[in-house]
Length: 281
Ligand code: NAP
Image (cartoon, rainbow, N blue to C red; front, side, top):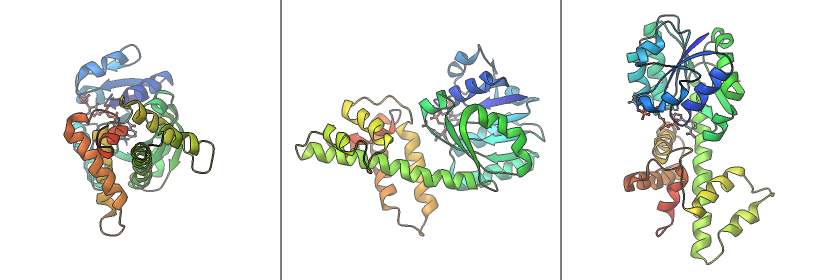
């Protein structure tokens, strides 16, 4: 089975490598070609999205946002009957628009965003939130199995993106809550490390607080999930909630993330929102 994999960034590169490791015939394309070159040993590096997609059975998109996915899908122009696994996080409106584009092109659309970050992507430990037509499952399964540890099939296309927003609201809250507790500790002359030590092993503990908290305490933010993309995700949560749910927390996280992006730190990890929470950090 030939897979055209479009987008070899932080997540896409290890996912494509894991597809090749699982024995699939992989062609990769990335807008900035240098980021795809390291995959040349295990995959064919294509010069354009169209040449990657030509004759491929499956198209995977793992790109920054909805407009990047739409532009790239147009450029790839996959043949009718191709299975499209759309794994980027694009929110609800874009998922609907992409599904329409797929329908017009005669392409089978599966909405399949993922949970997990750089390390789980490298270790093929992602969780796939899949939704789309039942008949797409057998063909999609080898791809999802190669990149992830668990796939949930959630119903018609769009349900995967819905659950992804729910999960992202949680991830954003955890990161922001960690930053605020660490910041408050500092302001109150409490050793911030005591916060992490005190939650450890109890009912309030969560692994994410230790990972993001360690970055905040060190002041080093190598990107596992870039702050710029986290801001995009916070905006998607706020938009999806509309007037039905008061997502004041997500709005606060969005304000922190927008501030760090504006200050030029959008390529750092989302943990860098600590910079906006603690004034002199
Ligand atoms: P990333 O490293 O910044 O990669 C973004 C990719 O999108 C790159 O390949 C980039 O190409 C491409 N791109 C951006 N704009 C484009 C355009 N207009 N046309 C064509 N390509 C374009 O980000 P990532 O972390 O891999 O994220 C990819 C997707 O996964 C996002 O939707 C993100 O929200 C989602 N996600 C990320 C994580 C995470 O923890 N990192 C977890 C779950 C889901 P260039 O290399 O040329 O810039």
